[in-house]
Amino acid sequence: MSTNTIALGKAEQKSRSFATSPQKLARIAGLLYLIIIVSGIFGFFFIRQSLIVPGDAAATAANISASEGLFRISIGADLIMIVADIALALVFYLLFKPVSSGLSLMAAFFRLAQAAVLGVNLLNLFFALQLLSGADYLAVLGSEQVQAMSMLFLDAYDTGYAIGLLFFGVNLFILAYLVLKSGYLPKVLGILLLVAAVGYVIDTFARTLMLDYTSYQPIFDMVVFAPATIAEVAMALWLLIKGVKVA
Image 1 (tube, one colour):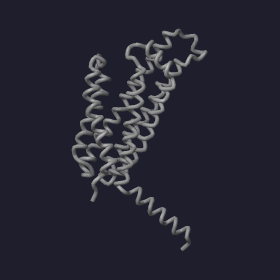
Image 2 (cartoon, rainbow, N blue to C red):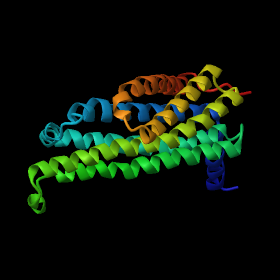
Image 3 (cartoon, helix red, strand yellow):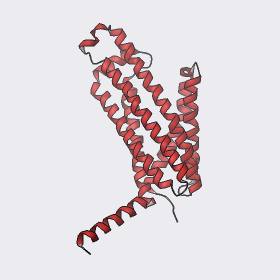
Image 4 (cartoon, helix red, strand yellow):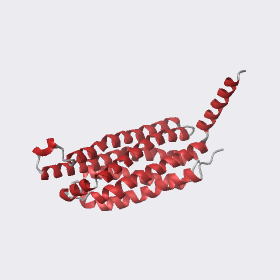
């Protein structure tokens, strides 16, 4: 047998071992999850939330125009989050496939649907930025019109994000069931994910159906996103540090 054949065989064995090792998959999943959490929080809470003034189109336009580079960094953070989410969909599918291949595949589809919605939704941020760029062809619009339209796209981004979270909530429902059934992870993590899933779904439908949602939005933000953050951070850290329990 040639040296090249032996080397190729060893490489294939290592590749199969890496692809099928639950512990390695768990570590990768934990790392990807942390990337998603950090990039999402950084882009929204640390950057866009400091630039966008709810209900004040003029102040928001002034903030974004004065910090365009920072605003673009927030979009870049969202892109990183979406790419990591797509990779995580595959890793979770491979990790939980032995528990239920059908449910694992369904969870991956819903996570990919969320990523697709969020990816398209980023266009709203680019549209708002383009309106505030001061391009010559926008001179036909008055400054107030430009500010109002840019605010419209920023509000549309929030709505699009909420739609994406509906698919994410369904994904978490399935993932929570797989965690509880698998025995890979502590059951408390599955329960926390289930609570987060309920919160995401309720928030999206409340935003859709309630005429005065904005009046109750601070309550929804506290009730929904606080438990969800705890659940997802706990899941990410456990996968990264502890891994999974397998026979």
